[in-house]
Image (cartoon, rainbow, N blue to C red; front, top):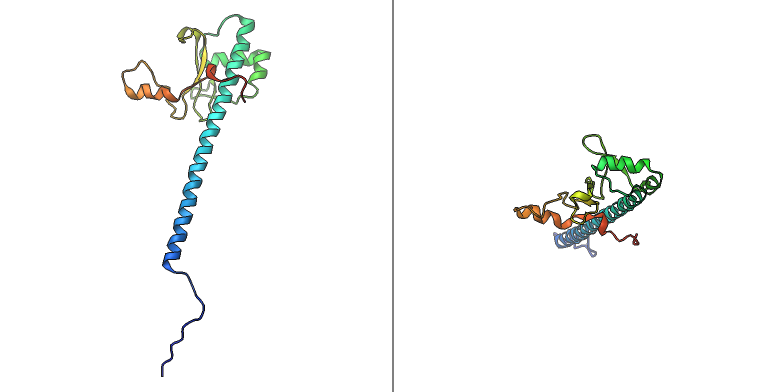
Length: 166
């Protein structure tokens, strides 16, 4: 006689339980990716605002004794500001790097070069610093191409930074 015995307790896991576990893990990982990306973007924006604000403060401090805006370009302005004791102290909190030509430069929180807009090329007749934002494209509002005009939308400017906020 053949005897069939059934186990009294459950052994192993069913296919449904494995699939549900996989779905839960995938949902948790997806949420983590979204949160991490959001934190990275917020950190880059915060860092960019800090750099632009600091550059703008240094530019205003540089202008006060000189009574003239620096004509640019960016690397000569940075070198001049580093030579001034007052502006050099302000720039201590900005990471100075080098551009592709080996000239002194500053990068935003996204790793893109920040550019200097001299007073004679500014619509406000005051110089400014500009970050290309997350997309890395400065764009051009006067361009007939929609992509060039759209690229301007995420640009950030030193003069737009609230000087009192961190």
